[in-house]
Length: 66
Image (cartoon, rainbow, N blue to C red; front, side, top):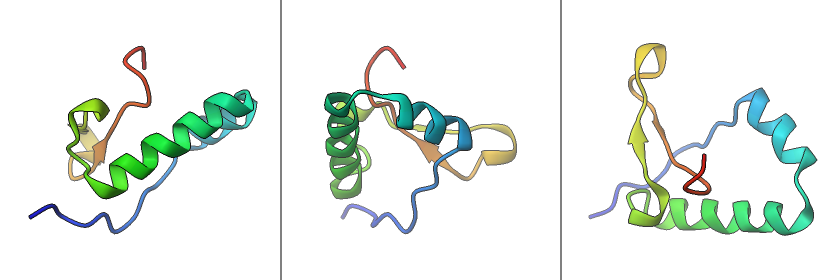
């Protein structure tokens, strides 16, 4: 059974960068988020556990270059 996502939080750095993206890349990011909401461990996402103060949180990549 896949665990349901309760909440997604965005850093202010991500929000600033997102606003500057071209529309095509914003749409691709939204599609990636949909994949994450359906299956947070889909191999396309490179989902990984964070460290330090955020050790109980998870993150995923929008592209392989990020």
